[in-house]
Length: 553
Image (cartoon, rainbow, N blue to C red; front, side):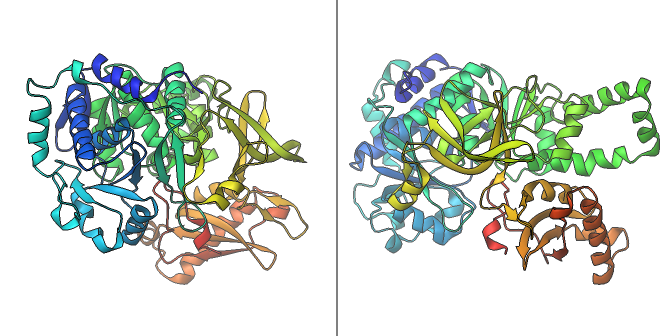
């Protein structure tokens, strides 16, 4: 068990950073200091206490990311209750199901999700409150003790001389206590509620502190969903402990909006998913690289270094000009993109984690990052092993399994799934295939996604899909096995095809089939793509932009 206590850590944090800015709603221009955060937290405590909640009771939180969402989250967990953050992209039926399944007694809800809630489908819920101002929603309240605007009166009565640092006292919450249930989007049907303890969260915070990822007074742009473990740890919890100022984007992270925000905020760290870098590479850098003069310069040893430096600086300027590191997580970075970025010396690194580890499993700073790895194993908080390895392509590949301070308790009210998650020795099965070389972990893809060729060879589809996704006019691709033949299902860029004059189905099929042939020319014979299927639209994806494979067969 980690010595640093979660509740006391944030009690000390708010006192230490009292006058510093903590959270800002970027587009609205609203900023909350750590003093403001601590007052908001105190108001949430009063609401929970007034409604009779005890430590360990569940409280649901649904709404778009904003500073107020973050402060409500902190108010719930520092009270000792269990927060159930729900990804705002979930369908309203799933939202109501999660509130019911989690046994939530109260709900904090954003304006845009109020209509999704139906009291008759949430039999345990006492009442609901607005995320933005903590007022009660009478139509979603069963109890006469639901607090609305009265929270201000409660606050004034509780702190008649004003709220000061000395008023920050959080109840004892053991690090072994569950504080968070995360319902992930998953890859095989309806979500499971991952039970995370205070210790799991502190393990991730301690990793960030030891690695010196973030610093007091720096700016950080949060454009990933904080209901997801990756953003929660490094865009939300760690910044508070370090005194970093978090700006919440509050809107869809379109490249144009992100570039504007990066330029203004000049962050030193960017926490991202692969899609952002891949869009910049494919949409901006690839066209430049096709310029014949630039292409010629890159083939000239004397000039190549200068061109690389200029491309690196241009990319750094895109991220605001001050970025020291871009951490990619949530999914694998396309190898072609990774190779190019490392070649020009861009400070990118790729980490690996999952919700069940809150989320970190491996990471290496960009200066020591090994290409195509998932970073180094974090021995201070965990053990990692490769289970039942088999020699494939000269590597001992098997399932990656983890045991340590970051590993969750299991799945809420799902003993069968929890039993499947762990081995008899207590190792957590990740479901990912990989191998270890030295201190570095390398991934080969999801065990469920692995395909077998007609002659029994293992095929790791993610590697081939990445090659296909880099082809002109291809947005995304997945491989499936049909009648002993590998078939690629692809989503295409129809607008780009139209601009190039490919308007008929036959012409489009020919262009995309040419992409198949090019990829086949770069992969093993046993892994050849036998056919292409073109989606009429885009793939359905999870909030972290992973394709929901189980929907496509």
